[in-house]
Image 1 (cartoon, rainbow, N blue to C red):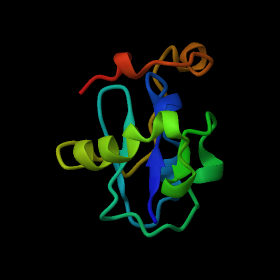
Image 2 (cartoon, rainbow, N blue to C red; image 1 turned 60 degrees about the vertical axis):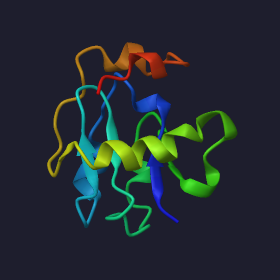
Image 3 (cartoon, rainbow, N blue to C red; image 1 turned 90 degrees about the vertical axis):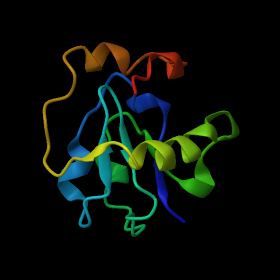
Length: 107
């Protein structure tokens, strides 16, 4: 089982999770992070670090978010690794409160 970044991360991109990842499995897009399922070792260290609770175990992803399992795998193939914490997006705190933002995902 791997971990998956889900919709709450879109337009927030807090990177607290990146600092604790022992295998550098996070990949960075313009306004979203993903986890490379081939690199993730299921250590769970990233889960409590996410301030918007966007990281879930694959088996715990709710039905309405299941597309993020495939999306993480797809985008991880083309996005560059992120290995150090960066500042969140400037309006991350406002976007953290918004639901249903898949249409805002930038590839």
